[in-house]
Amino acid sequence: MGKVIILDENTANRIAAGEVIERPASVIKELVENSIDAGADRISIEIKNGGISYIKVTDNGSGIEADDVEIAFERHATSKIKKPDDLVSITTLGFRGEALASIAAVSNVQLKTKTKNSDHGMYIEISAGVVKDIWQAGCPAGTAITVKDLFFNTPARYKFLKKDSTEAGYITDLIERLALGNPGISFSLSSGAGTVFRTPGNRDLKSAIFSVYGKETADSLNEVMYNDEFITIKGFIGKPELSRSNRNHQSLFINNRYVKSRLVSNAVEEAYKTYMMKERFPFYVLNLELNPCLVDVNVHPNKMEIRFSNEHDIYRSVFNAINTTLTTRTVLRKPFYDHGDDISNSDARLKTPSPEFSQQALEYPAVKDIQQASVYEDISFQSERVKETELSYVNDNANPKHGSVYQANETDDDRIYPEAIIAGQLFDTYILLQQGESLIMIDQHAAHERIMYEKLLSAYKSRQVISQLLAIPEVVDLTTSEHAFVLDNTDFFQSIGFKYEDFGNNSIVLRGIPFEYKNVGPGQFFIETIDMAISREKKEPAAIADEILYTIACKAAVKANKRLYEEEIRVLLKELAAVANPFSCPHGRPTAIRITKRDIEKMFKRII
Ligand code: ADP
Ligand code: MG
Image 1 (cartoon, rainbow, N blue to C red):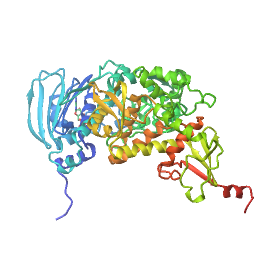
Image 2 (spheres, rainbow, N blue to C red; image 1 turned 135 degrees about the vertical axis):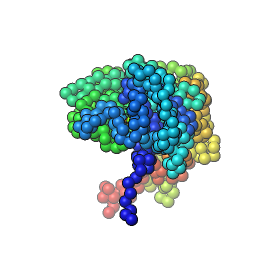
Image 3 (cartoon, rainbow, N blue to C red; image 1 turned 180 degrees about the horizontal axis):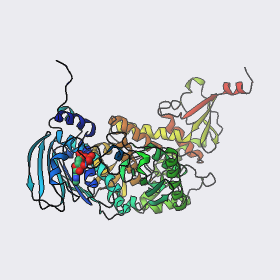
């Protein structure tokens, strides 16, 4: 007997399901897209256990004709293309005609549907691809579909599902994007615990952004309106200070379909380049309207990555759209996170905060008086704790003074001695030391960062990261998935020094932050930390903690281009002396470089 067999319909569907249906979020994506294609302007999604045990999508769209109900569940059943040419100009979301068949093959499905003009609706129940029941039913116009026990008959797939809260997070993220892409549709998402979020469906994108990201984000947007011969671009981009440390807050739609495109994010980021630091990413929600012939949506069954036939034109148009918006609308203002970087040296010696610092203080009205001093003054050199140490150093220093004859021999040169002769500060960035027979150049930012990092790390290891309590707690708006993430990972965030509680409505109230942290507003810093943790979710917690502590240290450290007092340099040296080996570099850049007297003599050809 030959070995080739024709797969029965049911087996074929189960195989197809593997391509399209990966997790509860992919089921919901297909169902909601069907609702959108059916012209619904109200879509509600209910889930239980992260959608694994229960999903219900209800819409007020066209409904399915009674005769078509059973057919809709057959593979390659679609009402959306009739002939191959239609594939080229497709504008609806689904068109492969395999979603319903695939979903029904791996779950228990119940569907109720009615068109506006028929006097009765239909009910159908399918389990693992087999129709169990079908009858006429009374129901409102539209479609309600329930999917239970996903993958109950495919244990290998079931095993790949993540914990409920993670699956729920994917779903929330998806519905948020769909809601942003369709501001004319009112979306509501509810889980066992109640309504997660709801958008008004009033056709106003800004209202949808407000529902998803909260007020603070909605208040820092610039509107984009652009068109040229190829393309119309509409939407909102974040003011530069709304930047994030990953691309999670970038949503791109092409003809209202949520997609991902490296080309478009590169073009947007290029336009932001001069407004934003490296490794920072702008917020955007953009819809590109263009002739569907110019887009290949069929690259992958999940239909997320998109390809353009005229990449150069698209790149140029997106760049121009964003660039024009930024140059005409943004009141140029320095982002919060890098204010220390280019304080001009002329002011650096002033003890009073520079005008920039006062401006930042004004922008965080929640942090008052007591906090202001420590949060907005530059670094710990000016805090009371350090002042005391400074004093003792000034005194220690009174005798040997500058230019003393401290000598070290070459063998102990992999340490730095706080008593070394300070030869100067170069470019307001490098400290020059004469130590024994060496010239030592210290990068002041790298050194301070290293000191803080090692302190934080040892505090973290001994579970003693100290929280600095905020004088006035700050309410921080989060997205639904961020909110779920921080509540799921409270222990972790606590272990690195954050203290907070749920404040309802996707917000938390922040009460404490890691003790060394000073440079930007506490809420902003918390959000950045969440971003970082979310984008590293798959790593070991210890590795994430390490990265986060390093970033905290980096942000808290004294910047380059800042003139330091001699006393400040002494404090830095004292602390640096306690660091294991300042000449090695735990993360990338070296802290200090040594040039020996011999090296110098060789350069000047005094010796050969
Ligand atoms: P596709 O969407 O690719 O056509 P699906 O398997 O997702 O394939 O759906 C099959 C067909 O069932 C659709 O073409 C459509 O006619 C009908 N359908 C599915 N869901 C809905 C809905 N919510 N409202 C109206 N019609 C629907
Ligand atoms: Mg579909």
